[in-house]
Image (cartoon, rainbow, N blue to C red):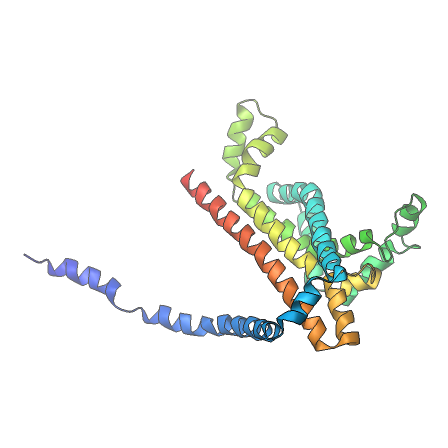
Length: 278
């Protein structure tokens, strides 16, 4: 004998959800926009594979992409070393100065990239507040890798610190306190409890910071036009060789970045599913 009430309950879930359909149609505008942009440059490059291969095997292009990715990794390492403790302090303290510190960290989010570049240049140029004393010990930032890293670091800080701070805040304080009552120091509790429970946020923050770092252009060229990162090389080839050559380099950068992000996102999803199982 059928149960009308039960059938009515399940029928509500079988009917099309008009809100989800409407939202899907509205949101698909952004998906279509991104797809068309990628499809256009992909079809353009596949139409002349010989030229694309020639550009892909150009040592200057390979070195530029490697330099960009390497500088981005250096930025992530610095943020892991210095940004993680800062994020923990901001997550676990409630001082009035926290708002000031958070505002200082967030400044790169609202500044034009050229302004950020000028700020970094004034600080690290050979006559700058930090550039001058560091030059005396042999560390030069103008037209050098350290300048590239500092410019990337400045614009990517908020992405890492804010993401990791949110992760630390989601770790219940009483869990950390339990570890401390069992004899663990705050640092040991941080390493053994907080870090593992925040691993996904740390990874996400690292990915966001790395992506922001390798995409920077204006701030970098203010202090280090040479050696050329990939965005500078694309601009240079666009002004000297035209759209065909610059778009080929851009396509190679898209492929390289997409491959890296795909691997990282798969790892992040696996880490998230592991956390759920735990």
